[in-house]
Length: 394
Image (cartoon, rainbow, N blue to C red; front, side):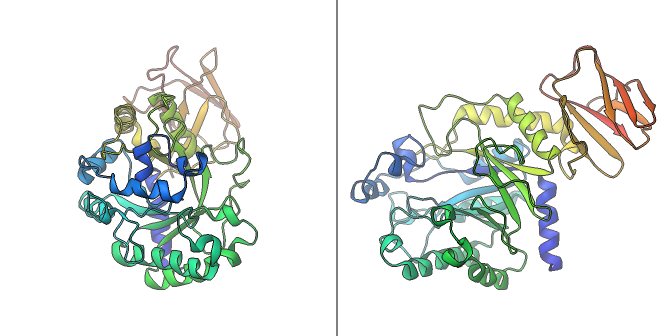
């Protein structure tokens, strides 16, 4: 594997936390990004939404600053979703944001804002297309179109990675059907360190870097379509919504609490995975207040406990009913939100422990170690009920 690509892969792994953005003209209908398909809206009725799309309150720098405040290290944004509408100034279609009343290229503006703030940027792109006539009538022509758009995105904006979604629509022999290896080879020649992800719900192809899990932690497989188990050589990432919707849904008020999100983040890191946490901006370009509040609280937690997330590795223990665990070369971090009733945390650990202390303030905890059994006496009441982190010096 090329040195540049390997360095980029490791940089991505160490980031651990990113912002997913699902945004498009579907936000005008306020019922999620699948509204065209679910409500069987014909192209002739859906396409005119572009002439109403005018997100005058969009501010790329504000989005990026929110991501930074939340402790996120990268952003992955939808450049084209399944509805076929392009959120960037594509030369290959007129169905794009620069032909709306807004006229501006939001992907260009976000790319520049991310560069200024040292936030990495990846592009979601959907090969599945409910709008393009060739998708159903001329597969070769459509393949040239969508390959051309992905190549265009890399040429114009130089992202850290490309995140494909929708190949599951034609899942049999996905490589041959979608000519993925051909596209990947072209992209690698253009940008050797480009990361590639494909949410096709199968094992990664040899040239794909990131294996994605949708709406659940790696290995859970409760939904039934995520690949199992995680591939040994892949970068693992869970993408998840804050409520139940990817695109803006005004009626979806089932927002996860900040405590839930903090635990999900720790759970991902404990499984050696990144968390890509989604927001669905409103049609005016703002991110809804409920999501902003939760992201800011997660960021506050990370300012105290970030060393137990960023740059760590997971898979420390086979089972952690009390929470999760991450590690570095000299430390093991115990993420605890479900402590034993007697506050005596007993774990199997073959390594000798020098000390156990609360990460936030350095308070030392009594610990005993007999052969492989380590017992740590926790406070009767956890200092942080969302997730208290204990650092073990190895």
